[in-house]
Length: 122
Image (cartoon, rainbow, N blue to C red; front, side):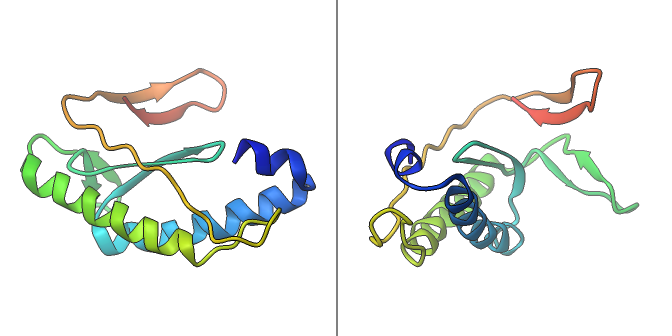
């Protein structure tokens, strides 16, 4: 990503990320994962942490099945790999390849910052 972004115009980088991340966004609901955020070229999701409550707002889950949550993340990750191959790199026209990291274990969530506070999961 870093080398590609140096070779093309900024608007091409934004168009590329929009195309790629829009495909990932489509996968979020299908796999029951939660999109935490995007940071640069990183697309971060969680499973088993939050869910839509009866009032329509997200709420932090008090418990979940770790194996089931991990399975949802892995299925999402596999589909991310396939979706990325459908997008071409703007600098060379080759299929996009991505790296995926999966982390498990305890986490915490909350609002960060006082100006434009942001809900995040760590």
